[in-house]
Length: 433
Image 1 (tube, rainbow, N blue to C red):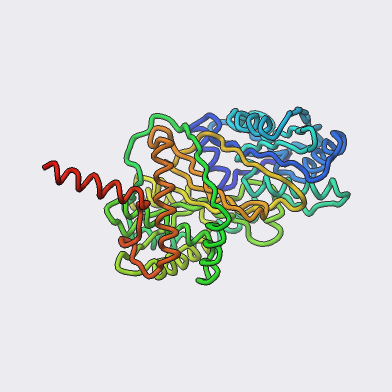
Image 2: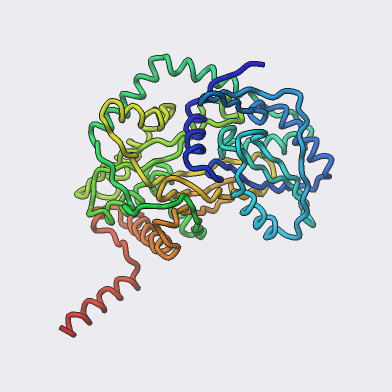
């Protein structure tokens, strides 16, 4: 049996799991197929997917404080079957299932066949050591392909391990490290959205949806300015951050990057994703439009160096510069992975994280809608505070889209009702005095 080291992305997850425990490393979602299938057909497709992707058969061996991985061959997969009366019942189960810890002593994947009155599908839970959100969508695409009688494209995660070893000893690794070191020299202090101390990693999620008019407005503006919707929202989030942090101009926001270059890696199930620090250099004397272009260029430059692992970066900064903190406590990500073929997918949060706040703009499966998920530490925020935060970010975003010549501090962060209330309270207090 061959043993392999963990990749850098896997090592970061492994360390986080050991430190925080619980369900912090779960990736979970459900996929309902567009066509009704029998249990036998779905079970056969799952078994084929399991055999196609060696990442699903990875096991860990821990010895003397070290960990290695190997691929378990010729193992029969056990697939559970559950019946649900409705999508609501399915999603209620998924929400609970996602929060149940998996552990690392055995299989790191779990498949359940979901039977609804008029639909069939699967629930998939992966340990983050063997998969990421892209992997879930990839597995859904593969299942759809097999159920159509096709053989999907699939590659070995073990090959990725070998490729990463070449990267770590090559010139690109050094260039990537130098890029982030240069960033750090420009900003060697972390600014956190929340300074509260948290006693746990427990998370709640609040979700908001852009209606069609708002979604079309965002996309149209992004297209006119030659940028992605991701960068437009990132700029609005950055301005919100600045406004609540005394008009700060230099700070980090983390973002999740795919870290998959080319067709082979994009068709390989496994843990690839990385989070990278984007150094926001906001200029309060420039317009929103100008700041948007600067932040877009910065984000693009960061993503050119996405292979350099965040855990490796922190270790380097601690050793070289005695930097003992994290670079950010807020992550903003844009999730647009697509399950090929007719499929209705839902992704369930694991209920734990280390960052104060994760904001996910979800544009999956070409639905044309946009959901904004706020996963927040319950020791640091309340649901009411998150609702107000979302409202303020949207106020900044859409005022900027309609008036992008405004400077960051000129944009309206309050709704008309809030402005009226502030003015009324102020005038009332003044009159009372």
